Length: 333
Ligand code: AQP
Image 1 (spheres, helix red, strand yellow):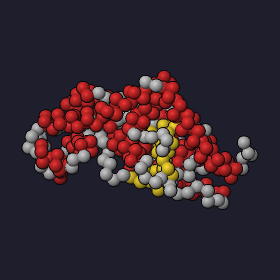
Image 2 (tube, protein in one colour):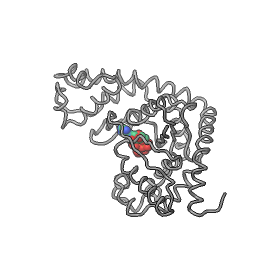
Image 3 (tube, helix red, strand yellow):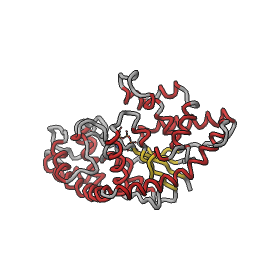
Image 4 (cartoon, protein in one colour):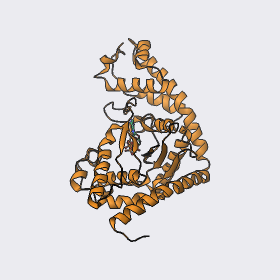
């Protein structure tokens, strides 16, 4: 049995991208034989400024959503990162192990900081060290990630290797990332070359997993497309990112193949295709949105679930982090 760790930032409401790229796989992984640890990574969230009231609300909503998607807190460990001090303790040690040059090469930092590198938080710069700590604090060896996260996993392995080498131990194991190939990257509804993101300033760019039927239908109706009719083969969509994205979403939520969907709509404009896509999306998203609202109605119960999860998480990560501190040379706590 291996241990799986994965996290999601409560930086907004989970999108269809988060769901198709991560959350539905998290639910499926619970049926395997590995131990699953799922974390609301609020320490990561504050690497960019979060309004405190909104952050609390978003963290509750994310917890409710994970439960609504099917994360079972009896089978998986579900908790918020700030409740388990091992993450921050180990991250500090890793801040002292990782090299500036390694972090400067991280493409996600360059993308997120843009031209403004002098102005972003130092937390954003050392974000990959905290991510390494999240995983290594549990001796987790399997991490489901999007392909954009592979560089961070390599860095987490480099950090573990340097720690082991510097202190002459073999304490932290290697992490095996697994990219779920069938998971297409879901792109923005306004720009097929940009990924769908929960913190995109435009609500029209994404489907939120709490959107109601009207909002979903309206967003799909307005989703950017091109003037050409739909072709009868996938190859012809190579240079049409918006059409390709909508088709990928349609296939993912309906379970139909992309080819079968194209065969139904080939030669037609996007009108009927979008109507059918909106229906498929509503059938998929609405029950989750409804269950999310039910979970959200009882915040005391959400607190209880997260706190039980945090105690289970701390029971694993606490002793591993204590041992890392002992290896480094700190006195016992
Ligand atoms: N558009 C996407 N398509 C497929 N998978 C996606 N993920 C995110 N967006 C897409 C996957 O969701 C998981 C959790 O993501 P995260 O919250 O840790 O951060 P992120 O990747 O930066 O997601 P967002 O929605 O874009 O958040 P913000 O806007 O706060 O930066 C990850 O497994 C990710 O691959």
